[in-house]
Image 1 (spheres, one colour):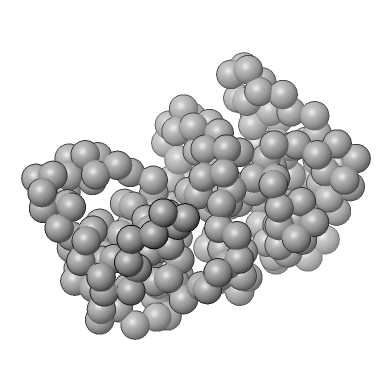
Image 2 (cartoon, one colour; image 1 turned 120 degrees about the horizontal axis):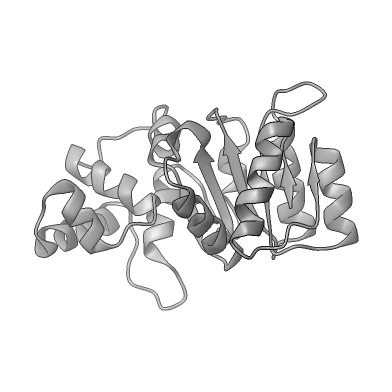
Amino acid sequence: MIAEDSAILRDGLVQILTKRGHDVPAAVPNADELLTAVAADVPDAVVMDIRMPPTHTDEGLRAALELRKSHPKVGVLLFSQYVETRYARDLFGGKVSGVGYLLKERVADVSEFVEALSKIASGGTVLDPEVVVQLLGSRPTDALTAREREVLGLMAEGRSNAAIGKQLVLADSSVEKHISNIFTKLGLPPADEDHRRVLAVLKYLGVTR
């Protein structure tokens, strides 16, 4: 399901998803209508803008938080032009699976957007690196080196070790060392029940589960 107040963008998202085999049972212009639609026919995932009627401030974020409480199995992808920190840490707290935050102007490939949405619907987590950078701006960054922060940003984007190495021109062993240092500095020991790559980003944002 989609909640987007721009009719052109809303229709465009519907066409993008349906052409790739996804069903879009509801595409609405505001958060209230989305919540009503979800209650009537629970989807696998929702895509929503943050600033929607009536105030065009944080309706999407507040609706996302409500959905996480009422329908925790529904994947939630925030798709916005803005990074809103007011409720973002609350959204990525608690159960961390099935949530994402992408910036519209930074999605250059439609396939990557669809892949991110599918990942969220399957319980994954996707964060635009720019979102991570802005959310981290108000928090201490002394624990990690500049390179480790770069690696962490790419981890938040969902990149594999091989993809991180390719983008930063690092050997696989160097990437593994940086990630190991990140886990150590953020106090994340190995645990079968936890996904440390996701927890590293959330812990650095100051979010507790």
